[in-house]
Image (cartoon, rainbow, N blue to C red; front, side):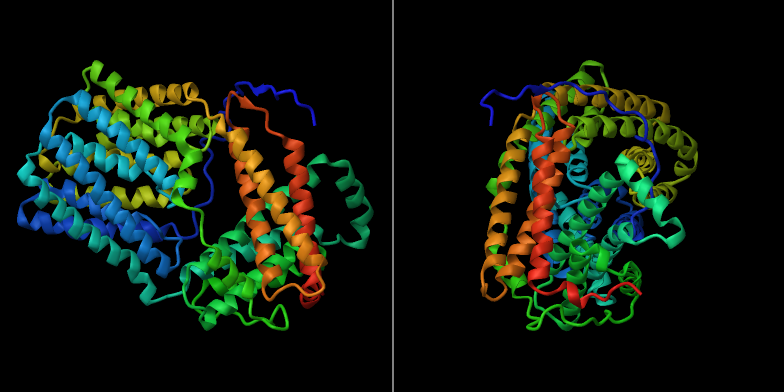
Length: 568
């Protein structure tokens, strides 16, 4: 290997094509949409009946926690939602105490930027998932600029805590009807992803076999398409295992789901010997309320001891996960602070909107940050126009205001999984209406402030992303490559062993699969970053190919592939 330092990756062209493309909705889009309506609606309607709608800002802090953890099994969801509520209360407490101690906008923006950076790092490290840190930043930043006295803080925190407890109950309620719903959905996704990969190996009919073979050989995209499908299948299988690891006790339904995930693993390892139709049939059964499909054990022991061995290994300490996220946290802190200060310099009355816009941009790399910025600006500008149309209706009275906010809450969650800008169209008027809970305001002034803050936050936020380079992205690739190689060598040793320990090969196989998924995610993130070492594309591709070959060999070593019926 050459000792010369690799040249840095220059600035890439920023994409425009496809940034606003509308995709398919999430398969559970209605769950967070309905949950947030119930979680927000009950406290707000209660405050409306009491004539204290001015306190809705504090209940919203707890209610919006209902947006989180919908993909997690209920045992894990209970813990995650509890931490989300506690994290929200901690952020609001810091914001309210700060607001009660000072009215200096300069200090408030600085505290808001630091809170946003901490929230970004913690959400990414814990992988709490959509909607990530944006809700935390929105609530804590708005709280900073809400006039407050120190004596009012406990009562306002109590309102947020009560609404948070209600949001926790709303998030857990579906478990009473379908206790294994999240695991079933994750398993169904794994089966469908494995089926999509296996379908690429289905032999064409005799009349078209020759022409198809020539076409496949001539097309350079055929191999790339298979690689992408295999990576997507591996990621879906890994996500399914993570979902099952979080379910607690190994009940009968969970064991049945484990066997189905093993079938998905088998399909990825031996796609030519897999019937994709059978995988999709099982996936369809999992989507409903029928019993989990029963399949034959994948091994003689059928104990899947590797699952328990992997669970016992635990997760990386939080401090280790926070380290690589330092550049993103610095970007967030700098971008939010500068956006807030520029907004103040322009005389905008609500600089926290610029701060929140900047915080919402930051993704895994600069290219994705740019795309999010375009989506945010387009969505907010259209949303401002929607607010202008709805404002006369909302101003008919407090009840109309609350109902309009609930409608936009539902619309935001229904649309945001199709594309972020679509969700922003509803988020923008909702945020503008929330400011009127304390009293109706002039729509023109609100709209002007929002437009200015959106443009300022997007421009300044992206500039900060360019200024703060993420040179750790290259180190993360090297670490991911080393992890894959160690996992591959360990799996290969167990394959060669005459009698590997109980569950050892199962655990090693899944750890190798997890390392390959992490490598692909790390490489994709680094590929969109500027001013860093060039991504070692060939090494990554080689590591992926050898790793997946080792996975396939492990499957054959366990004799699992023979249990998957050949195509009819």
